[in-house]
Structure formats: structure tokens, C-alpha cells
Length: 435
Image 1 (tube, rainbow, N blue to C red):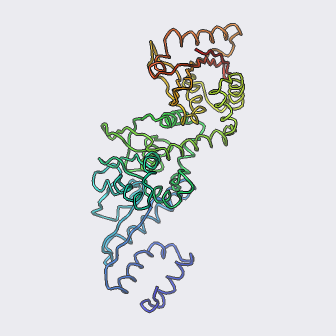
Image 2: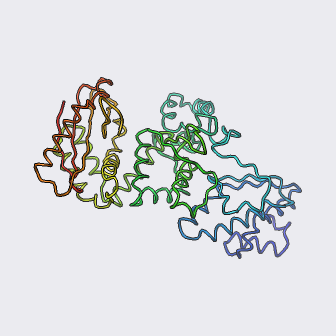
Image 3: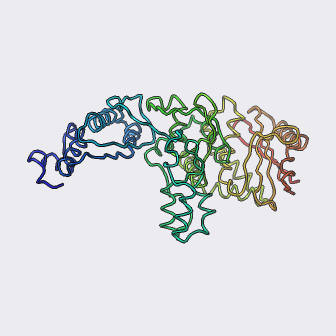
């Protein structure tokens, strides 16, 4: 800053702000004063671009200084954007409209546009035409099909096929490193991870597992977030996760309800890392153990799979509350263990096939591999060995009698592995047959 246009006190205050030594009142008025200095220097009104205004609010909520950051942000926004004679125009960007805390109450005539709005929908990212142009300019046209698979998939308002700009730019700049997840929204990542990994959030994890499998879910989205409701209102979680870019709405239903899905492979990989991290950190299941178990499952080493599965269940399943809907909890947990197989298998659950609904079906993407059907049951903890054996045989017979394998046959899968899993209390017993 040219000190010639500043008075002595202004120079001192500017330096205090720059060095992080200012008072709260100085910070609150700092941006407005900067517009005054720029106007004095140029003779023109100032355009203010405030990016990720809500990142500090996320951090405040997660780390325990929420009330303080709300008060500060309200003061900064009011001082900068309300009745400021040095302001030409202001643009504020962020993930969420945190309006119930009234941080925008001092401002009027705001134009608000979100990922659900039709106006400016193609400005939230790169369009497919723009990505193709960038790939051509960078002489990477042959990479476009995989670029589309990894980084496409967002729907903004009525516009489909929006790409994540950060990931596209990073891939082009770092092509030699190959395709990977370049993007993660660090401002909301802590909140999302803590919600997914919370012990009591079995239903939430079940929904995440459906999304990882490529399915859609239906949820209410609220554009006006209030963080104090976050842990009490699951709609707030799904709103945060959607507006943060982890999910994209595919269809508007009614009363603010939308169909949601994971937009692309990059984000699906991020979710898988969160689930794997949860299994490893909170449940002490290491990725190497999961990998051995899933490889054994797909390589006809069933005894090894059974031993690994039983060990994982014995070591970790006391973490869960199975008093309510125990079979649903068991099924959700098994689906979570199998999520890392989604590159090679389409993982399905509770779908109609033959004469009923199977519990879990793994449809191989390579038709030369065998399909897998799992039937899960839960019986009383006091069951005898004879009752356990009878339940295992009944579960295998149910797969055959209800023809759960019809979906595999329709996809021309020639061989299948049928598995019965019986939970006695929280102890797992398995039996299998190849057909």
C-alpha cells in the first residue's frame, strides 16, 4: 500500500492488521477501510470479491468458537457491503447460505444463486465444451473419456455435465501423476467425516454405502443452514454434503426433496477413503485386512475369507447397537466391508430377483468372473449347534428356491458363489456352495 495516500494513524492501523496485531474492531472495519483507501488512490469505486466466506463458520462450529465467528462475520459483512460509498459491487461466494444466524441481516437487495438455481448454473464449473477445448489446447484429447469419468457429473440447476474446475486444472498440470482425487472441500471435510464415523450413525453410513454403489437416495435440501441444528437434523447434513460438492441433485421431487447421487469417480473414491479410514481408525480394521478378505472372496479361497470375516466381526462388532433392526445393522455393516470391491463388482442389496429379494448380490463387471449372492440371518444368542446348522442350510436353500441368481443369469454370468451368513448374537457363522 502506498503510504503517501494514508494518514499516519491509517498507516499504523494497516500495519497492525497486516501483522495480526489489531483489535477486533479494527478487523471488523478493515475491509471497508481498504475500499476507502483504494478509492482514494484510484478515484474509482471498489469491487470486492469475498471468497469462501463460510469456511471460517465451518471451522468455528467444529472447533468450538461458533458464536464468536458468527458475530465477527456479521460485522465484517455489514461494514463492507452496507451503505459503503466506496463500494461499486460485491460478490460473495460460499457453500452455504447461513441466513438463520442473520449474518446478512444488515444487507439488502442480495441476489442469491445456489447449485439449485437456474441462473448462472453453467458458471459453477467448466462445461463439457470448455473441458474439451482445454484438453485440445493441452494436446490431451485422448484423455477426455477418462477425464469425463473422473471429474464430470455435476448438475447445477437445469444444466447437466458440469466439471470440477480445480480437478481439471490440476490434472492437466500434473498429468504425469495420473488420475486421482485432486479435490476435497477442507472447510467442511472435518464435519462430514465426524458425522459419518460417529458410532450412532449406522443409518447414515448405510445411505453412504448405497451412494458408493452408484444408487441414488432421496433427501430434503435446505438452502438456509443453521449449524446448531446440525447433529439433531439429518437434513442439515445432506444439505451440507450436497452444497459442498460431495453429492449432486439429479431430480427435483417436491417440497424441497431431491434425488441425490455421487457425481463421479473422484468423489466416490473420497467416500471410500472416509469409510476405510473409519474402519481402520475407529474399528481398528486395517485396509490390508480388508484387502486380504475381499481377495479371498473373489479367488475361491473361501476358508480364508471365512476366517478373516469372522475375525473382523469378533474384533469390531461390539461397536454397534443391534437392539433395533439387527438384521439391517448386520447387512449395512457387511455392505460397508464390501464397498472397496466396487471397482470390480456392482454391489446390490434388497433387490427383487427370481421369487423374492436377495440380501446382497455382487455382479462382476468382468463376465468371466463368478457372481456372489449372500443371504443373512440373525438368530437367538442361545441357539444350539443344530439350530445354527439348520439356519445355514435354510439360508442356502432360500437362495436356490427363490432363484435369487436370476439376475446373474440375465447378465450371462456362468458361475456363482452362494453364501449363507448366520449371526448368533454378534458371532458370525458361514456356509457356502458354488453353482
